[in-house]
Length: 285
Image: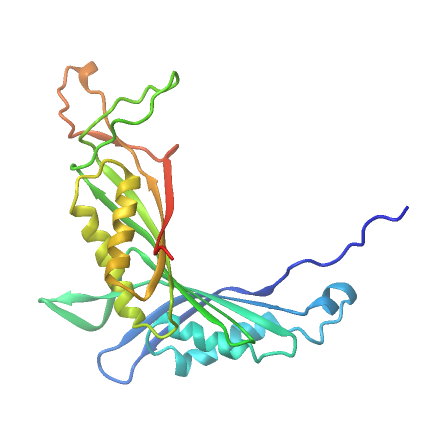
């Protein structure tokens, strides 16, 4: 009795960690883009897998070269628009390519201020990465996602954790005054491919930070929903938004054993284990 046929399943290939840096020098005030790009192609690559026939494969080294070449004319604004240009190009790069995904991480550089004025060509790197992902297929469909990563935030009060479900293994005491700290990761899906991506990205970051400040937080879950609601109310071009919040615990350190009073000023910031809160906030159909 013969066994089941062994066949190739879903597959893709591409080039990762293409480190691209561009300086715009057409005026005395320079602009910089510092990117990490990943390109991934889907299509009919059966011959390469089954027979070792590479004649229909675009070399990943060519993908790398293409990213640098297209940056000359197409990396002039948002990384989302640059991603679209790359997707459009790679969909015509070979006879068997049916879909392309481009993922971009932008490392942000801010002008150094000297005597209150931003310097023309000197920068300092900011914390918090900007993300974009563009997908397209040969049928003309395009999808754009954007995101934020590695933004550290905390509030030293106006946060608590009480009224939670208790059972026999529960030892955590309740509190209505604690430090809330997390590292924000967010991604959102656009309902258009022609948004003002720079304006929206900066606005989403601003909204996240403002929402953190504007309420008593009974839980990270409640704050997650509030942040998502605020973003969707302000930006109609965003279809839905996802957050991931590690709960970076700050625990009041026991100084009683040394005869020292600690009224919540001396804390131990833990690394692991930690709570992990994630969720989508979206528009109801």
